[in-house]
Length: 158
Image 1 (tube, rainbow, N blue to C red):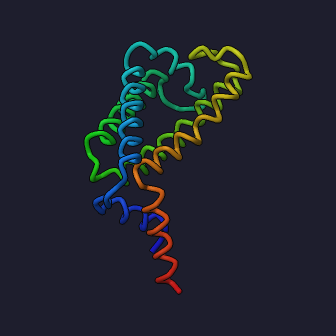
Image 2: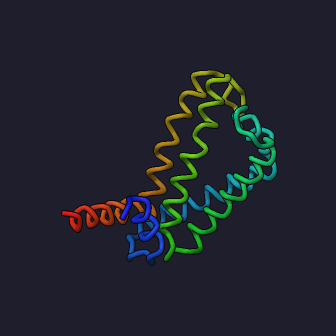
Image 3: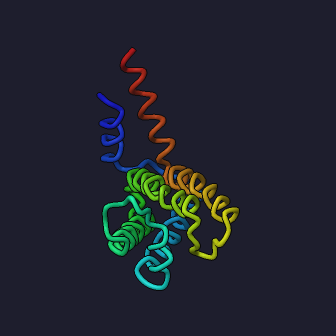
């Protein structure tokens, strides 16, 4: 069985019990995502359009609207679906990785947005994306579940 099929099998299972700090972390991340998604659809729409790399073959506004809907959906799922937190955590981590090229593009193209009007500020922002990925994986227990699944897969192959 491939690693991808293991991840998909893991996502299909209900989440095991979690700790209070992780649950609080998931709710906080969900709230952050829901707010950010709402801002995509309203007051920060133009700012987000400035981050869409030129090489993306879709209309900038469509990308911003779609990513906003995805963020709201992920945020709501983190808050409202605690039994599905592992697959939602994996999806949130994947989302943060998928949008990272927009942050890189903003830095490389020297695009001002979100008050980031210097290369130094845009570069500093790049270092915030990995903690978001880790936050999604930790707060949902996805990292722990993924490690356990891949570890058990390695033991059964031997």
